[in-house]
Image (cartoon, rainbow, N blue to C red):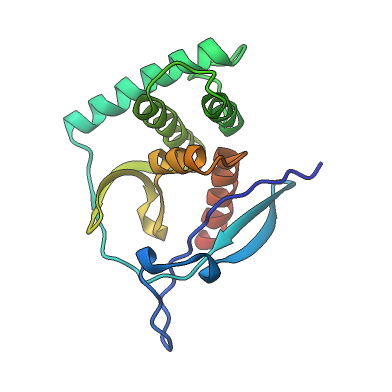
Length: 191
């Protein structure tokens, strides 16, 4: 079965001959449409080259850990109430995609911020559990954000931001695609 999934995947690559654009200056014409097969699923995504910005990776503070725990609790209640037989203990990216679809269809009664944070934390926890990533705080010139990372191979995701983009751009299957792309990238970067 071929699953059509769209995602915006940005590859940050430094170029020796041509200086890439800043991320904020990229336009639709800068993106290349690509597809790949991961674990038997066909995924579709866009990629672009952008200038690499300096980022600081910081350990979580107590307040950050409390925030993540509160979001996990709310994610558990969302999953249990809306996805039959699932909870924070047995969910998958597909479960989170179903929640996103319900939210987009206005079938969930919660604030956008609460939804994005809780589903984003659940996605990040899935990446931590399944791919050996760790939670971190990423600071750069754009601000401060929660991320999951494997520092040794410079692989970082921003799961809360990914949920926000999935909602705003009405992306189908976005969390599953992110998981599969991260799995693919981890496998390639470890070689």
